[in-house]
Structures are given as structure tokens and as C-alpha cells.
Image (tube, rainbow, N blue to C red):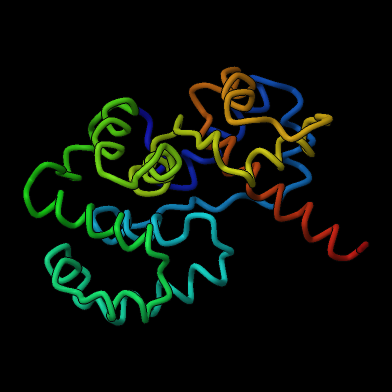
Length: 213
């Protein structure tokens, strides 16, 4: 299993994408070099992904700052001890509060162990994480990409990736998760790098739209 752990691996992936599909060459050229997008794993890393789902970067950062200040230290045990009022004051939605409690409970009772996932297959990681109430495929994919660094992980359900693919490859409509999964098959085993490029490309597209709009 290839892990994106440094810039050298990222460079290897960028070169491989250009060889796998020539359409990547102008996309990579039009984008800033994508960041590694690595973050710590464990409860803190997974909790941050849950908090950020379906939020702007600014909103997610604000809620995470309040959450981390109240759940201190940031452990499953402290999370379970938090009151409803503690969580309400962070700005977390009710569904995310329930998901974070379910995650903390699974870690405390041992039904979920995150450490072995770093050597597991994508399918095994998905099965383990989505067994927790409230955690879906998107969260599992982002954990694979950001916390584990799996080079072939790909969050096809991510709206920004779908919209970036529409722009990058001249698609008439934004592809669905299923359609993007099919499109991304040609990018194996570097779909994780493809996602990083598309996110970078999407930022560039939005910036251009901001200037012209």
C-alpha cells in the first residue's frame, strides 16, 4: 500500500497521473501544487473530519476551535463526559453531536480501534468506520486520504471534487459519486493524488470566478 507521506511521493504521483491520462497535464499546469493534506489520525483527526463535513472552511475552523477548547484534553473519555450544553455551545449540529458521541463510545468500549487501520485495506477501513452510527463513506474516504495517507483513496462523494472534475474535463453536468468513481478508475493507483490536484484546481477556478464575477 503506497502512502503519501512526503513531497517526493506526491511528485511521483503527479508524474504518474500525467502518464496515465494526458488530460491531467493542463489541469496540473493550471493548478497550484497541491498540499500533502495530511493530518493527525486517531480520535482527534476523525473528529475534525466529522466536524468539517458539509461546512465551509471558515465555519468548520470556527466550530472546531470552540469544540477543541471545551473537549480538553481531546479524548474519547472527555467527549463522553461532555454535557449537551457543552456541545451546543460549540455550534455543532445535533447529528454531528450524536456521531461524535457514537465514535467516542466505540473507541472506549473497543468496538473500534483506529491504530490497526493504518495497515488495513480501503475496504477494511470503510467497514470499520461506517459501522459507527453517523459515519458515512465520505468521512471514511477523507480519513483514508488525510489521516492514513492512502495514495489511492478517493472521496467520490465530495461535491468539490465532483465540481472540479466537471470543470477540469469539460463535462456538461457535475458527475454523481457513481459517475466520478467510474471516471477515476483510470487514475489508479494514484486517485489520492488526483483528488489533491482537483481540490487545488477547484480553488483556482473559484478564485477566477470571484475575479470575473
